[in-house]
Image 1 (cartoon, rainbow, N blue to C red):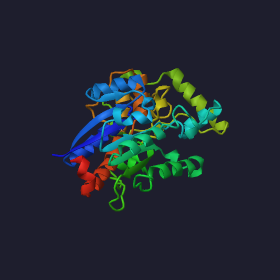
Image 2: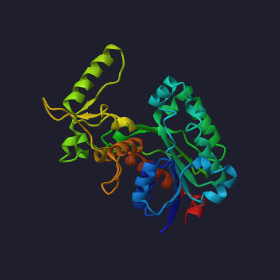
Image 3: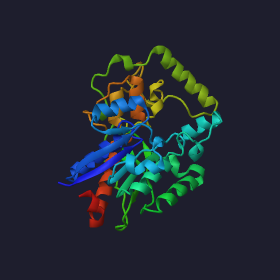
Image 4: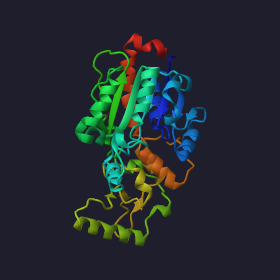
Length: 336
């Protein structure tokens, strides 16, 4: 059985790696993740609970260009869900309010793409899979994405990126993300996966007996309703969103969910206070398996799940990438 190796950059809690592993197993391959990078200590804790054998480089910015060959192992596929905050609508709005730079001008997170680029151009893996918020496509009128593609296409075949929605791939969550894939060798046009259109509803992802602590208090419920009325009068779109178990999908669950759960409150019945989703439910809505372990606080678990990738979508993208690679013996030279 052939082995395909990878590295997992800006890994969070390992969603990209889980997705690739699932795709490889279905196609009859053994997977080996040789390295992951993640700067957040709580995310490292969860990653290590699930993948204790994988080597960590905490801050990928600490890897100087001249040291890449020494510090980064050879690999077949590079995975990276590079930080989305500098490009997301909420992130841009927050940075503008704080008079901070955003996009590539954000020197803390916005220029991390170039660390990916340096590794790609030095190690030359057979393929890569990048994921980010859909707003990357329209940021600066598309100029930023065009700049990214121009750099990637100097050494790789990179088809037009595609925005895919988690609810089209069997997850009851509206979560649109842009995917950029690339290949060292051209082997005909690449096609992104078609939606599976598996029918699910929110109830399919809920706990049977959620703890009562997730029911919001009378005071918080009153505050939510007041704020929604106030924001509506002010012409703002922010306010709680009531989700019904029979709904086909929740709205996008973000890393801010830990604050008060207002973006997705679950309806419990007439004259009953709604409740927040549990951390496990949020991970389920992202496609994480029941075997996935996390022992961090609820606050950190919500952040981790909200920052994660939708497993079902990434698995299908990775499956298409592997199928494309294995059509060409040149691509398999290093993989076998």
